Length: 113
Length: 111
Image (cartoon, rainbow over all chains, first blue to last red; front, top):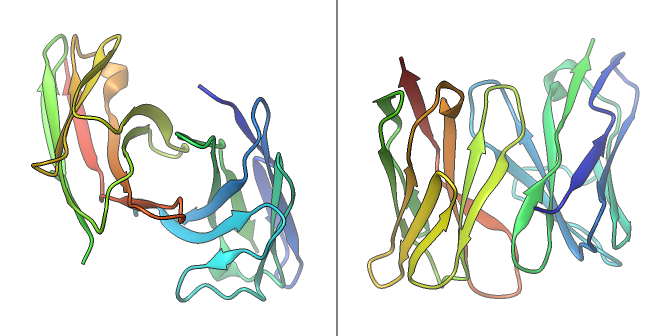
């Protein structure tokens, strides 16, 4: 299958700081990428759809000014958690659409102290 | 509304065969996906069905019946490492590529 990478895999930060997470499709171009969040023992929750060259589409209840998404190229989407707080601590996972299938990155575990 | 149903939990024995069912009701249909997710890890792609029938890939097979809104994932020769959550997801019709997710089936494989 196609390969999707995420960086960093784990980040610990202080409350009030911003954290940027990168999602890259390594062997294909992805017009569309998705950002999910998952709390322990809960289901995947879609946060937003990231489209190359246009604004992201956010799901209901997700603050677009807090979770900034940029999809500047066909292989890179970034999620920036601005002014992070302890309640933002979670497992953030991206997925990339090949035009047929969707593959996930390995995820980023964010801990906000 | 849009709905994906799959059993919450299943238990099976090492070496056996297990079938995980998924039924869906969505506004349009543009493919059904199965993913495997181990605790603390991201989901891993298992299969994609868009036409009716059985797709076989090693020990795993996936079946789709669009007229019945039904799919199953078949796991053969179960191994302990197959203990995981199995997620069924449907992509509805239209330009929006996002997936609609079931809640997942937690499979425990016992020795």
